[in-house]
Amino acid sequence: MDAIQILRQLKEKGVRFTPQRQAILEYLLGTDTHPTAEEIYQHVRAKFPGVSLGTIYNTLNMLKEHGYILELSYGDMSSRFDGHAKNHYHVVCSECSKVVDFHRPLLQLEQEAEQKTDFQISGHRLEFYGICPECRKKRILIKQAD
Amino acid sequence: MDAIQILRQLKEKGVRFTPQRQAILEYLLGTDTHPTAEEIYQHVRAKFPGVSLGTIYNTLNMLKEHGYILELSYGDMSSRFDGHAKNHYHVVCSECSKVVDFHRPLLQLEQEAEQKTDFQISGHRLEFYGICPECRKKRILIKQAD
DNA sequence: GTCCTTGCAAAACGTTTGCAGTTCA
DNA sequence: TGAACTGCAAACGTTTTGCAAGGAC
Image (cartoon, rainbow over all chains, first blue to last red; front, side, top):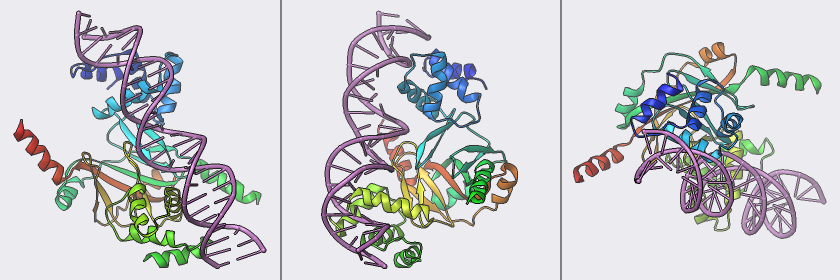
């Protein structure tokens, strides 16, 4: 689904179609780098020099509430946003904070979680933590220099 | 493992044993409510009226770096901390932000993630999102009132 | 005695909010 | 036309930092 289709669906819910929103959504759908709000801001500003960070957050929250994007947050850094809301998991580098997709069929554990906790489950998130190949190489180089 | 044992292990790494740290760790190990830094601060302050929030964050970051506690963060609220670093997953209420433990054998997926992404994986986190029983009841009451 | 840690205050950071002006429907 | 949205700036809450005093070892 592309940006225009999503915005048309949203229009039926009373959400207005604006060029800023289109630009934000197009950028998010076109990348798999899980950008921060600031990174999205810098890219959208290339097209709309007047756009403000407030509008970025505004749009991201709206898209998140409607389930079109995913917010990934970690304690020590700003949230990252993923325009491909479903069907994959994430691997996060503990050193450089990069987030990489890990494609794999979704787990069938939600029913088990519902039964054990009595929550009404609507989704889940699975993340792996480790060191990415690039940071591993850097580590080896540093060790050799000692 | 209790607070004193953990602090003794840390002492061997050059981390000093202080009563503030003991109090923070004891509170974290003794609860399964996943408190925020502020909540930990309020509890520790009952014993040490002079303690500062800075010290709480200081200690939490130190414990996190040494792998004794887990930081759980979500976009729209402050981080929560879990003193039982391993062997369980979480269920988060989208309405009241409560975090409940979900006990279950850990997934054996880290090797698969390593192979597919070339990261060196050291751990993973699995979280379910939904509505807790209490918030579900409230929703029903509100609907009936309409 | 040394150096790590504390408490305090200020600063930094990401994010949200309020408002006047603008734009989409 | 009118409600929703934008840009801007100020405000907010969480977390970090700098520094002098204190405490662990």
